[in-house]
Image (tube, one colour):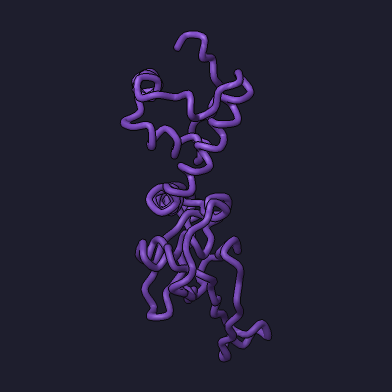
Length: 180
């Protein structure tokens, strides 16, 4: 039983909210993981974190707080206060320092919903470049039949979904239009 307990505690850290609630997270977690563990909206508007710890002189009577970046690795027993801002929102960079699958999934979901128009524009530009590289035609040469054929071939629900996938780097526009 002791060995199992030791394994669990080596893989988990326990951090506290300013109100004293204990949250368990995997070792290596960041304030971003903690914010999403509290609530999706807290994570989506996270702009930083404040770590509250006892003074380093060892007497433990005085608490000090310090701001840490979102990629800071949390330590066992720290009190974490998430700083939010209405203007803060997830970016693709957040995926590089979110350690938990739950946080990464929530970031991806936010990006998929809120960056769709941007991804569609990027996807259209990338497809345009590929079409021009494959021959003298551009996006103007794609008619409804060609759009439907490509969507069916790639199992996309719509041409807009296809453009968004290309823009989000979920799909590469490598074209072989000889079979069109």
